[in-house]
Image (tube, rainbow, N blue to C red; front, side, top):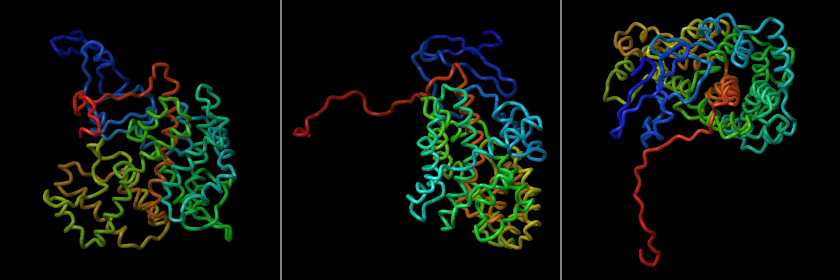
Length: 428
């Protein structure tokens, strides 16, 4: 076997399969010809050991706690950049110049308005509809309102639809919230930043002036940056799979939103906040710590540990300081937040959590911050979808531009009945 090949013996045959290397991270074994040569497939539920594509967008090393966007560490981006700048980076591959960022921000700003008929579309939902249900429906309907940018073979159409999705998602999310609480929709304000505009559309009312609090705007912008992309997770893979069939970009992003809605994916920050509410006050923490250590107790500490990160979640490091900045700016006095900070302190010093690598993750902090700002838990996943849209769009564009991309077609291990003859109804 050569250095760039792997050897496999299956069904009495010995095969050499190419080993492919990326710029960073583990090598992969190219098994595309495995079925043709052996009549066998690989079996990998959840695709946890399978690379489904090439990508130059995001790199994660869970063991070392590394997250890079186009090579830039997430900590540096969250500290020094803005969500608009990170969006440009993900879409175009490089950080923008001052003029490029100004032009990109202006383009996004000019696309924030929604077609006025969509206001009527919102009113077709029940008053108590979940904001994610509304978001799924409205984003999926965008292709009916903006069908002039759905030709995926046209690079200009792809560019326009990408800008429209990134620009309109805050408006869609804010309107979903306003509809759920019975308040009038607030139109975008082009004088504000991307994040400041979203805050105004969400919490502003026509009867009075809305003032954006800089610390809150900065905190939410950071949350958007930290959730912008996360490699080939479930929702991103859903967007790519839908896109592989040639579906229009609005339908693909709606599919991603539907996948994100699952509690195992986008609902972790809500679960973490609900856990804090269950604990209640700092004096009850130790009791719940002991419960978490008891294997026979179903209670689990939500917001700790991560499926990918086996070290400290690099996004959580940024959020630690942000929590305190928001609390100070809003003068937060709530046992819930005191409990969160005390729980964080205990978990970072307890040998059990250190040994198990159960460090606070980004969901632990983001839920606390969003709640302090005033968002109900039903909006948490909506905000996740808003931020992740740029990642989905960038991944979709990368896939469409890849000459080697094919329609997704996972295989299966069939375990049903073998062939049998039909029995007429009268004989059964």
